[in-house]
Image (tube, rainbow, N blue to C red; front, side, top):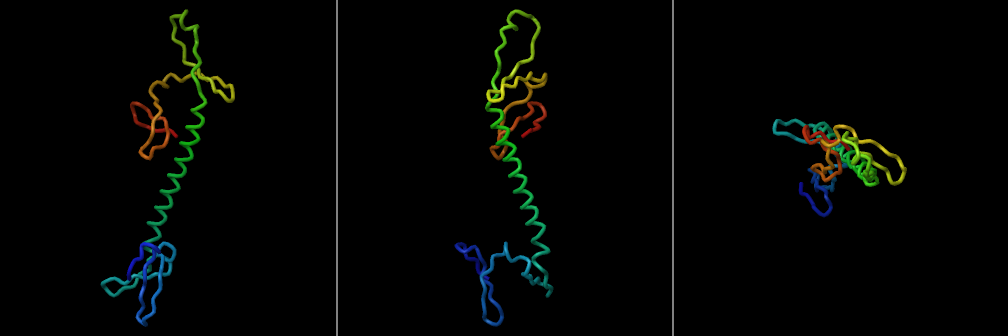
Length: 137
């Protein structure tokens, strides 16, 4: 058989002289492989687990991409509220954040200084823990 890059198909030649162009990704369930021991095996049995793993990997990347995009959009609207009262007091106060669209005000958690805005290996926005390396999307 020969592979045509433009068509992304294999040319399969049969014993009777006929031929057919097949896309293995679409026709794997009807193709048989002949091994050196004289055995015929359905390609589906070898191909399906790899195909399912590939689909799961793509689905996971899509899920992480969506989470990262949503996180990046939500983080873009938060601003630090300057609090002048800390100038007159010796006690540290938690930093306050203001959401520009909703008007919501939140206090920063005690461990917030450890979390950093980051990008993962795929370039997706996330928060990464400075000590453990844990990522949150």
